[in-house]
Length: 100
Image (cartoon, rainbow, N blue to C red; front, side):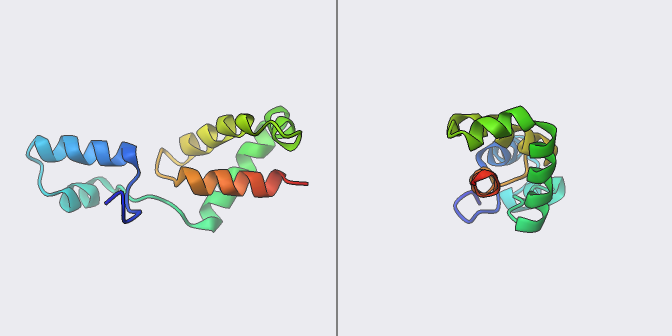
């Protein structure tokens, strides 16, 4: 499910724990818990814009070439999306939006 892009590592761990606890098959557990990786540009873009607006000093660091600072923004977007977002896609959107 991770290789197909349905789940990220964190979600996969939740599914594995539930399967081992006898809650059903991986697909059934993921469906029952509503676990689905969000990679839709529209939804992610809205969250990225909100996080950038709320963290202008971190955004400025990224604009100045300190790409490590993007990690803080990625973490905030993941928090906003309740851990159900594609981190690689978030990073791509952040860097795209903050490039000059």
